[in-house]
Image 1 (spheres, rainbow, N blue to C red):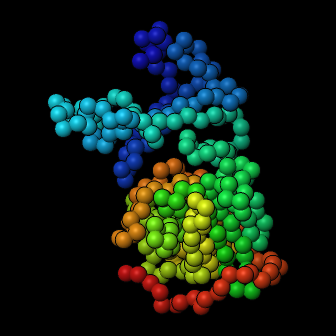
Image 2 (image 1 turned 30 degrees about the horizontal axis):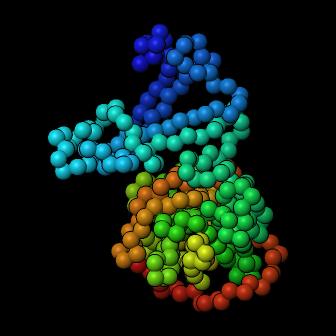
Image 3 (image 1 turned 90 degrees about the vertical axis):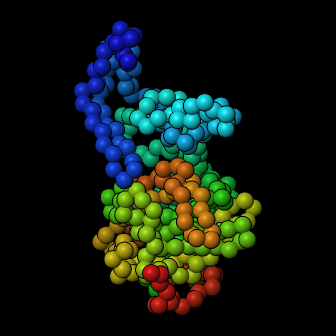
Length: 308
């Protein structure tokens, strides 16, 4: 506690709550530090450290500690709501943040360098990470490209990721939050078979498979250690579980730089390993005069494809 170092608890506000298995803590503090146990928030890059505690029975020690051995005398060493060692891997991380800058996407530790801004026009766009990478040369950890095909009023999406053992995709939202999000997720399994699914995310639970799968012309492959997924969908599918891009309505895009594990048999997925990045502004995909001829094979959209 700060008073151990001659200071005091000088937070000006704090609250916390738990919902859908997620703990959220918010607090407020003065920018200028007057206590020996505080740092001032300065208009400069600051070294920010973050960590989370270990869940009982889900230890993250490298190498494994005595708690993981069958001979451990105290199996419940880590108890709920107890302040103890955070562990390794994704349990901790660092970031360089200037809190005075305008709103920017901050990449959590392990997600790579800061990304380029979304390169976007009404006809299409590109988002990629790390900065300066090239999707064509397979140097991006993640990239998302979208292009409008006006004569069909459909959008062609191409996603790449170097994290071939995790799912990937892209999502669309009206409010920058994970809840009420339209997401297209997928992967390529070890046999080379691609799988994509049209889903809806209600909260922090598993995505729900849409009864109407409004994606088509799907393809996927792994080449040179990079997974590439492609699909097409209408700008407006008239599906209540899909969000629409129209000439007067734009959406935020979410980019899962590193997804989670997937089971190619039962199609279940685990939580993303890195928090998805949300576009800083709404992305518009409007009618435009782009009449280029694309070289992929087109297939007829199936009106009856669906899942219960």
